[in-house]
Length: 334
Image 1 (cartoon, one colour):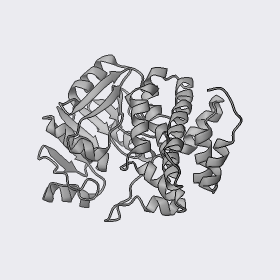
Image 2 (cartoon, helix red, strand yellow; image 1 turned 30 degrees about the vertical axis):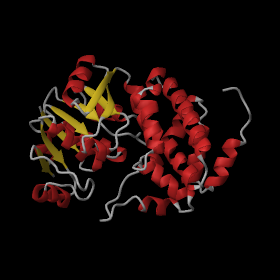
Image 3 (cartoon, one colour; image 1 turned 135 degrees about the horizontal axis):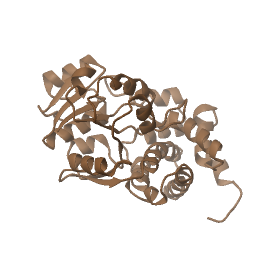
Image 4 (cartoon, one colour; image 1 turned 90 degrees about the vertical axis):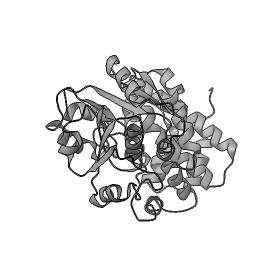
């Protein structure tokens, strides 16, 4: 297929590399002309995915028209705060019937909408899907065995996408639960920051296990109340992605939490995510915490870990105090 990948960060580049290895022709759109030139001249995205050769079947471009003009499928892989503007720009450029796939794990802060909802508003008339699951970019780019979920309300599109992205090292499972898959992918970043804080404070495996388990419970509560299926949260998009992001050393959200637990401010912790060349990396959980607590309040759902992370990230509460309060909440049945 001819595939456009919108976003040249680590995840967008990794997906472009993976799709090219699957014999697709890929046009990779990047905002940064210097990064595009790196790929053209050296065959590598030094800024965001160093050490990985970008196949010749990937054509980098800074022109959105060139990236999607002849595409049969478009994947959008950019931070959530920029998605509405990009989908708006795609509206007049996408050929009729081209499928749109969101690979962004976040929520729009102002509207509390999921990314496929944003896509549907700004670029209507296209089949929509979400790709999510436990998948660190560098491991996908290296061809390490990975399993993800592709979800769409259009069963035929979900199955076509499943076939298009699957390879011997990358297995996609099809789902109809767009709401559950998107919310699971976004909300786990909030819990991952908390897991990083626990580690940064020097707390042990017992604490981390309790946090992950109770974190999954509150993610599932909000997800099901929003229309997601309960079984989605025990699968790859839910438990699988949560465990990876809360325990893996490559997780940006966990790393940010570790820095907070070690006494750094949010601005210092955010700066610590930049690579050696100073390119910033986004920890989606910082913004998603605000969206998650707002969604929970509107739905009347208890999310104590998310509420504690909001206090730490946005209200200046000391991380250790937040953890201690979580442990002293009223006793109840599981």
